Image (cartoon, rainbow, N blue to C red; front, side, top):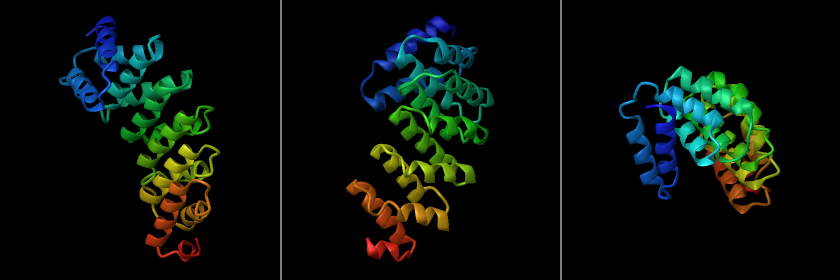
Length: 202
């Protein structure tokens, strides 16, 4: 499938509002993977003027779990820059690919100006955190982010994905007085599960 054909197909996928139908259509494009599909998706991720196409291209690449070229190109796309949904997709797909050498890219996305990109970086880091200590450390930083949606995602990942440790408990304890009630509740529950007395003090 050449670039023009894939761009038309991804534009049709991007227009689907129902997420289940969206991913079914995306799956149909990659099963089986046609010659040139990955290379064409890489080009579209970097060059398409259509944001929905770029996001769908990132998700198409991320679906090829274990494909080193896909992970490298996702990293390249993030370094090129941009804002909004395409970079969010890059961050999440790097996590889904378990691309441990993509941590430097996620580190850059974790300090991006866009709240949604930082939130997606937290989600991607959560998928890497069980095996990558640096990912856990970045989540601890993000759990103190100024944006509540970013704090909330990072706190969730600390509570559910990161191996227990003093630094993790301290980060959770810092959120038991958060202004957001959902964050407070998740941090308190996570501390309680760990038997930390700071849960009772909340």
